[in-house]
Length: 301
Picture 1 (spheres, rainbow, N blue to C red):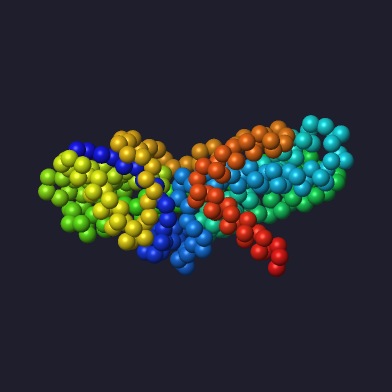
Picture 2: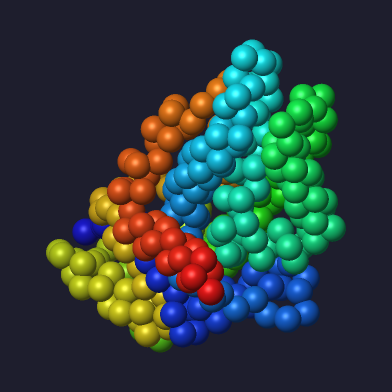
């Protein structure tokens, strides 16, 4: 009987947590190893979290700025579009900054470019805080920063996804070897064989596909469970997404339109996706609660 199970990273602890830190630090050319302080979120959860953070940040900054500018509403639609684009760019920057792993990568691999973005964002905020702000100046600042934020965020996202793939494959290979399988691997897949039976593992976008072949009856279920236990011993805790699935996307990892085209005005449409995303995944919920907790701690200091 043949079965395919698709799993995603649920948690990285112990050796796996150290391993992802080493892989990310090495990919960034960092001298000091990256050590995650918060729970690491893999590619699917990171994408959902970015969507939620973008919507939250856009709405929060819009509220503050609109209070300052409400007496200038008569300036017309041009000011509204300029304000919305500025808020859009700020929300993008703040969202990347709030995800620990992405903030590390852009800071370690693209230090000067990220500092430049930070300076541009500070200038945008200063302009928005000025009653007689310059539309031309804000337009220039957002033009210079938005595309750079997208490029750096996409690079960080892809680097993290590649690190996850390497961690998944190496941990699966170690686990299969401990179960007396002979393992052959390349950059994105491996085949482990033992006698007449084999297991194929494919990785992409933070997900792992385990495909059992030639296992008699329902013995493949028990074998998958043994593999999962070996992975957990090495700190890789997986979540089962589905079974009997045969397709795992192998396209180049990239952001999935997480930062939308700039809205003309207002955050109502921007925020529509946020609640569904927040409620969709417990790992994302937990990360957002931790961010809120940290913010409260900083506020009361």
